[in-house]
Amino acid sequence: MKPIVFCDFDGTITAEETFVAMLKQFTPKMSAEIMPKLYNRELTLRQGVRQMLESIPSVRYPEVIAFSQSQQIRPGLVELIDFLDSQAVPFVVVSGGIRIMVETVLGELINRVAAIYAVDIDSQGEYWRVKSEFEAGTELVAKVKIMDLYESDEKVAIGDSVTDLNMALSSPLVFARDRLAQYLDHQQKSYIFWNDFFEVRDYLAQRWNR
Image (cartoon, rainbow, N blue to C red; front, side):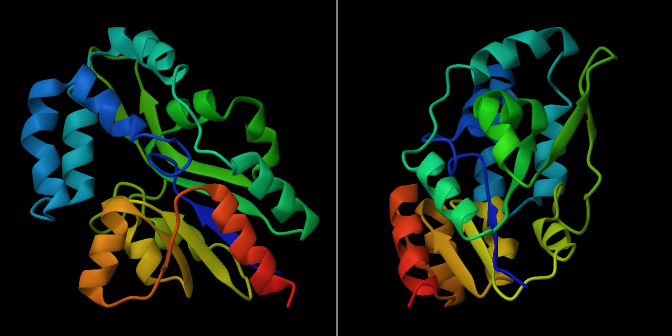
């Protein structure tokens, strides 16, 4: 069995917290109320993210797609995927955000990832309705449950925030930055701090090609 890489999307693949920025723009009042509670872990992701998403009018769906088209990818992602391809290591995107944003930002790179797991949106009614195949526990997208679908010698997690905490705690090798690094410091869980995907690629290349 080969290693496998599980990578968050928002604030990890994207240079900025795209999903958070979208929520602040399209549901400002509710996001201002709920976001601090999520970061302080006073409210579960399953509750908070659902409340925010389901407060967005369906008529704004095209605006969200347009918003996503302007978001930048963090440097080095293509090069990391090139390296993983050379090692026959799958790259799986696991997002606590919405699928349409992930797919819009990735564009043609969709064809180079092994799978994408994210929240699906039903925009047929007046307001969005959330659909998540992997909703469980405190999470709208239970990333550990997704990881359990894959057998691997070494599971690698890459993330940046609270949505990645359970995934990081369940992974032997973790690349963490921003809030995720702070949470892991608190939990006394070891991790590799990273700034861009070039650093992730170089670390893995050294680790696997000893």
